[in-house]
Image (cartoon, rainbow, N blue to C red):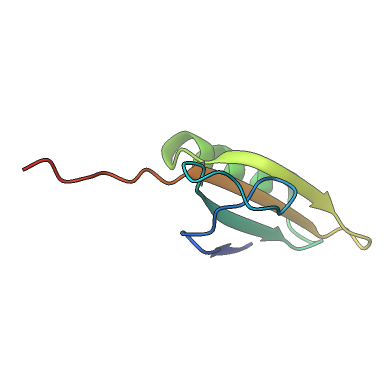
Length: 82
């Protein structure tokens, strides 16, 4: 299974349109090959959502059995107070 993180400063809605100024998300794409177990793929998505605070935005099933899972999490910008 391959993982890749997309741009952390990209501010998009689910449809790919620009969102408001306070709605920035970080995206993680998990790609699963047709020979990989579905149970293993579900376990990976579950671990990312539990420990990394990712949420599942989209999943795709391709012809031939390949899958892709798009996970996202909100980027929190913290300002220095002192």
